[in-house]
Image 1 (cartoon, rainbow, N blue to C red):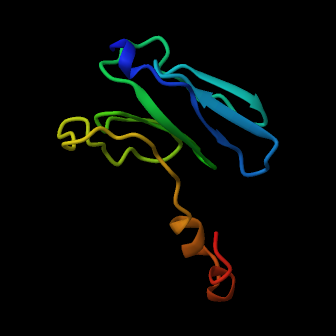
Image 2: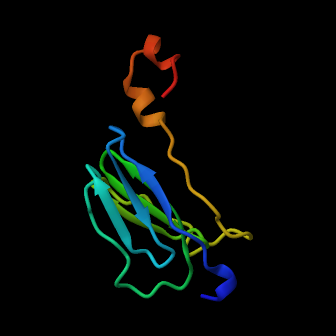
Length: 113
């Protein structure tokens, strides 16, 4: 990693709003409040920076700039772009409510996530 690549930590807030997790560029995770610690890449040498983190109800998901995914979820790993990186670096990650919305009734779904 070069000095130009160094960025600040990324983080995510728990659904309750009473906790959060932060991930550093080297993959190390710090958790506060009710955000459970489920693992970290801090002890692993990474080839590129971790640029984002999403806390889900089943764990944490981190993404590195070339599209590699570091999965600390209680669900099956569905893959990453690490072996076939996009032409430009990934700069952020965001969660989607599609799974949650899919489980809700149609009336509640209209109200958003």
